[in-house]
Image 1 (cartoon, rainbow, N blue to C red):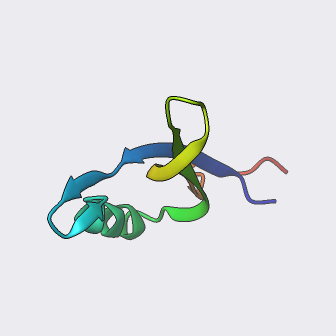
Image 2: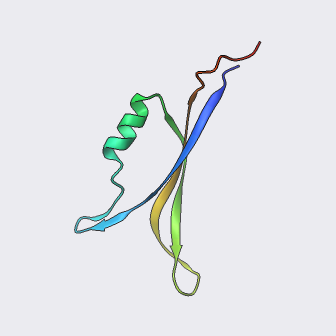
Length: 73
């Protein structure tokens, strides 16, 4: 049975003239090169002053890759 290791990352978007950007381009390619696979992403929704959701401000992501520790038989 494969053992997995996990990590998570929360990213808040930045507002630019071109709209909201994550700045993840180079980082996420590096994570992929290190064997990390995205298994889940959840948008981070900000509430307005009345507690009503008004927009996505970021994302929470969970990654996994096979553990370097051998599996037990």
